[in-house]
Length: 272
Length: 271
Image 1 (tube, chains in turn red, orange):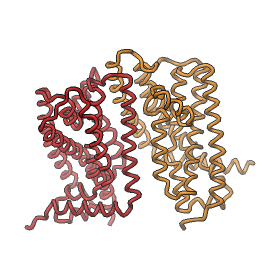
Image 2 (cartoon, chains in turn purple, green):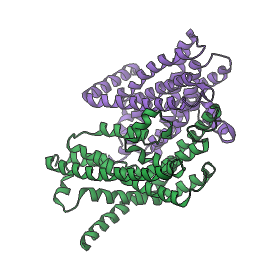
Image 3 (cartoon, chains in turn yellow, green):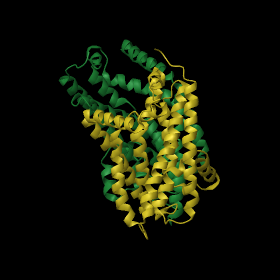
Image 4 (cartoon, one colour):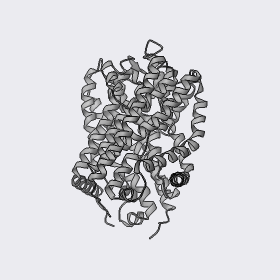
C-alpha cells in the first residue's frame, strides 16, 4: 500500500491555513495584537508584584520573566497548531463530519490534529523571543552553554506534546458525550495550574496538588522543566525532573493515542 | 400605564424562562470559575513568604485572597457578557430594525433581559458562591459594620448599572463601525486590568493610580471589594459612592444619546 507523505500533507495544511489567514488580513493582525497585549498585561502584573517582593518561591524577577517567556513559547505553539483543531473535533463529531476524516487514507488522529494552523497565535512566539533575550542576560551569574541551546528547545517541544496529549484526550471525550462545549473552559482551568513555578504549591494542600499535577497529570513539568533549564544553574537536581519529563511525554502521547482510538471505536456518526 | 407594565413584565418573564434552560451547566461553570483562586492563594502565599513585611500596600495575604473573592462577586454584578457584541450583531444583521418599528425601547428591553439574566445567575450561582465563601471564611476579616455593609451593597447595585450602561454605550458604537470585535477586546482588556480584577489597584505606582481615578473601571470591581474590606472609609467612602453614581448617570445619558444618533444614521443592513 502506498503511504502518504505526512510531512507533505502537513505542509499543505500549513500553506492553506496561511492563505486563509491572509485573506482576512485585518482580522489576522487584530488577533495577533490582542494576544500580545494580553501577555503585556500579564507582564505588567508581575512587574508590579516584584516591586513588593524580591522573589516568588525562589524565582527572582528576571528568572521569572524567563518562566513567563517559556509559558508564551509553549502556549503559542499549542494554540497555533492544536487548539483550533481540538475545538473543531467536537464540532466534527456533532455534525457527523468526522465520517470524511475517517474515510481519508491517512492516520485519523494526524488529520484531525493538524488540519488547521492558526498562524496569528505565533505572534506571541516572537514576543517571547524578545522577552527571553531581555531577561536572560540580566539573570545573576548566568553563563550560556551549548546545553541551553539543545535542551531548552527540546523541552519546550516535549511540553507542547504533553499539552497536546491532554488536549486531544479531552477533545476525544466529545465522541462519547456527543458534544463538549466546555472543553475550552476546562482546558483553561487545567493549564492555569501549569503557569506557575511548581515550588509555590507547598503545604498541606499544596504538596499533594503538586504531586498530582506532576506525576498523575504531568502538566506542571510542561513549563517548569524548560524554564528551570534556562533560568536556574544546570545542576544535578534537575536531572531527575528532566528525565521524568521525557518519560511523562512518552506516556502522555501513547495514553492519549489509546484514548483517541478507543473513542473512535464508539463513534456512530450523526445526522447525514 | 398598566398595559405598559404588563409588557415589561412579560418580557422579564420570557427572559427568565429562557435563562433557566441551562441551569446545570451554569452551576458547574460557576464553580469552575473559582479554580484560578486556588492558584492565586498559592501565588500570594509565596509572594508574602519572600517579602520581608507582612503586608503589601496595607493588604495582608488573607486580605488579598478575600479581595479576589470579593472582586469575583462584584464582577458577577458588573460584567455583562455578550451585551455590547449582541448590540453590534443586531446592528450588523439588521435585527435592530424591530426596535425601530415596535413600540419598545431598545435600552429598556436590554436592561430587563439583563436583569432577568442576572437574577437567574444569582439564583443558580448562590450555591457555589456560598460554598466557596464558606470554605474560605478564614481569609475574611469578618463582617463589616452595618453602614459599611449597606454601602457595599449599594456599590454592588451601582456597579451593575455602571457595567450595563457602559457596555451598552460601547455596543452603540457599532452604528458607526460595523465591525467592533477588536474594539470590544480592547475594552475587555482595559476592564480586566483597570477594574482591579487582576490585583488590588493600590499596588499601582502614583502616576497610574491617578489615571485609574479618572476612569470609570475601578467602580466595576475594585471599589466594592475595597469598601467591604474597610480600605475606603468615612469621607472617601461617600465621595466614592457619589463619583460612582455620577459615572452611572453619565453613561445612562451617553448611552441614550448614542442610540438616538445611531438610529438617525442607521441604514438597515441585512434582510
